[in-house]
Length: 271
Length: 303
Image (tube, rainbow over all chains, first blue to last red; front, side, top):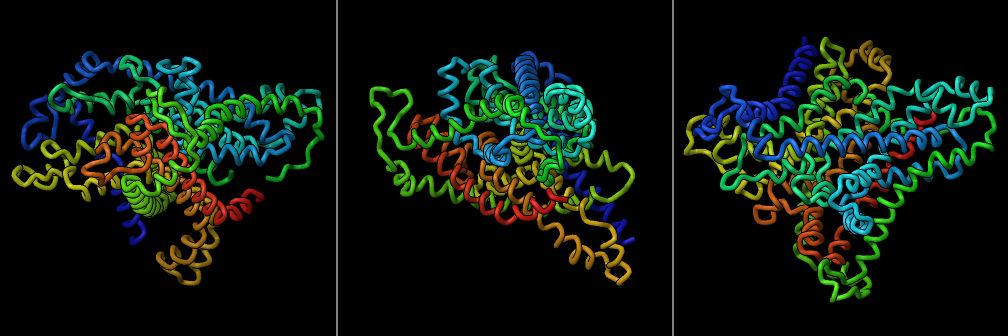
C-alpha cells in the first residue's frame, strides 16, 4: 500500500503542477474582458472567442504563425539534410579526427547565444540576411546541428551493421548505402531529431528578436514577448496567442512522447 | 566508441568528407567564427552607430573595466544565485518525476506526455504565463491565496527577492522534466536483480532507494546537472519578458546585461567582453563537469 500510495501521490502532484499553470492561460483565453477585469477575476470563462478574433486580426497573430511555420519548417528540413549525412559519416565511416569533430559539436551546443550574437548579426548584415526569414534560418541550422548530429549518430551506431556491410560488398558506395539501407532503418531516429529541431526553432527567442525587427516578419515568440496594448496589458489576447503558439507543441508531445523520451535520454547518455 | 571489425574503407575518404563538410562549414561560419570574432572585438574600443570614433585596439582594457564594473558584479551574483538555486531544485524535482514515470502503470504514456508539456512550451509563453499568474490584480496566485479579499492582494513582482524567486520557480517549472528525462535514462540501466536481491535481504523501500538507486544514478544526475547549469547560465527569455532585470537589479542576469550593453547601448567592444566572459565561465565549468563524468560516459559507451 505504501508504494502504491506514494506512486499515486507522485503522479497526481507532478501532472497537476505541470498542467495547472497553463490551464489558467487556457481558461483566460476563453473569457471576456469583463471576466478578466472583475476583482476578483472569475474562475470559469463564459466561452467567448473574442480574444482569439482580436489576437488574429488586431495583433498580427496570422503573420506570427505564418513566419514561425516558414522559419521552423525550413530550419528542420535544412538541418536534417545536413545532419543526416554528417551523422552517418561520423558514426560509420573512417574519418580522421572524428572524436575531435564530435567534441567541437558538443562545445558549440554549449555556447551562450550572447557570445555569438554580435558577430552573427554583423555577418548577416554583410550578406543581406537581416530582416529576412532566411537570415534567421541560417543560425538556427548552425545551432541545432550539434543536437541533431549527436542524436542521429548515436542512433546510427545502434543499427546492426550487417545489412550495410552486405550492401558495401555488393558494391554500393557510402551515399547509396546511406540512402537505400540506413535511412529506412533509421526512420524513428530521424523523426526524433526532427521533432527536437522543430521545437527548438519554433520556440527560439534571442536570435529572432535580433534578426527580424519588422513587426510583419516576427515569429511567434517575439510577437508574444513584445505583446503590448496601448494603455493596459491585453492579457486576454496574449493568452489566446499563447494558446495558438503552444497547441501545436502540445499535440507533438502527446503524439510523439515515446520518441522524445528515447531521443533525449539516449542521445544524452549514450553519446 | 569502438568500431566493430569493419571492411576496410580507404576509398570512403572523399565521400565521408563530403558528408561532413556542409555541417562543418555552417558550424564554422555561424558558431566558431563568431566566438573568435567576439574575442577579437572585445579587445577594441568600438561603438555601434558611431563609426567616426573608429576602432582602436585597447588590449585587455575592456576586461579590466569589467572586473571593476559594479553592474557586472551584481549581474554575476544574480546569475550565480539563479544557477545554483534553479539547478538544485530542478535536479530534485527531476528525480521525483523520473522515479514516477519510471514505474509501470496504466496510462504512463499520457502521464509522460503531460509532464513534458512545460518543457515544450515556448519559454516566452511560460514567462508571460507566470507574469500573469503573479499579476497584482488579475493573478491566479492572489485569487488562490486570498479569494475575494482583494485588499490583501499582493503585488508580487514589485518585491526584488520575491521576483527573483518567481523567476527561479518559472525556470524550475519549465525545465524539471528535461532533467527528469536524463535521470530516467539512468534509472533504466539499473538492473532489476539488484532490487530483488535487496528485497530478499529485507531492505525496505527507502533503504533500496538510498543504497541502490541513488549511488547508481550518480552519472545521470551529474549529466543532468551539467546540461541544466549550462542552460541556467544562459537564461535570457525569462528575464526579458518577466522583469527586464528589475525590480531594481534583482533579476539582472549576465546575458541580459550583455544584451543591453551590446544592442541597447551599442558598446560593441565592452559588450563582447561581457559575452566572452560568460562563454569562458561556461566553458571552464563544463570542463570541470566533463572531467567528473567523462570516465563514466566512456564506460557506458563501451558496453
